Image (tube, rainbow, N blue to C red; front, side, top):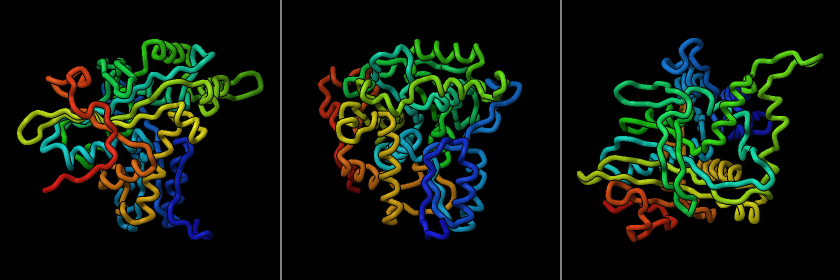
Length: 362
């Protein structure tokens, strides 16, 4: 990096490689960007009641020395985390006076021809975040863990995706958002589906989720690596996939003294992403967000020091530039009189893409 006068190092590797890339960027004096933070280490004896080493612990602990050196590490800059944090920042700055809860909700109606089970994202990472103890943050008690797949709820996703059950999963937003945004609770939930959860439980029951190497004949292999090797590569399934995937942030609080709930979201349609970019929707949605962030960093629109998430920066230029890339976010007003289906109420603007995130007039 120093030899070629590199300004920004983008880590798009497996998060198991974060440490050396993160430290190399620091030593080289470069801005660092990744899409997933360091892996967690659950509590060794009481994993569902006590927090072990959380996601990104070593990276966040390095914040003071990055600040001292005048360097920026932008961590978790994919779609979730990443765009979900941008949505939280926009809501805090422009939509709410006070925020009670920020809940990231992810769902899709994607199907894959010819497969009863095939992941749309890295199965290694999926197992890691789904079978580790989920984390929740509350202002009154801090970070805590729960049972896997806890607190199920039905969430109605936009753009024709529909209603799906979502459950708690370990994710970086729960660590990052409370560092930058005043609120009372932060959660992350996936719409995994009962069948997918059964598969994950079966993998765990058989020990196929383990990353500890075992002897198989003359070879030494980790069961999870074997599972990842025998399952189809998600990057090569795009031509068999159908449907849409939605990433979004559900914010509850008050505005002008009245209760308010808003879901800010981004939808990727697999047919569109395959036709225009040759990439399946889940991977493309993850990749477009750091591209936008890199442009903002390169132009100096986003700048800072320390180890920060996307929620530390102005959301407006990010959302505007996302629209300029012809991939717009949307916003739904929710709440007691609108839930579960704003469409059914005839609410103006239902499922209408927001083309420009314009700061409201003072």
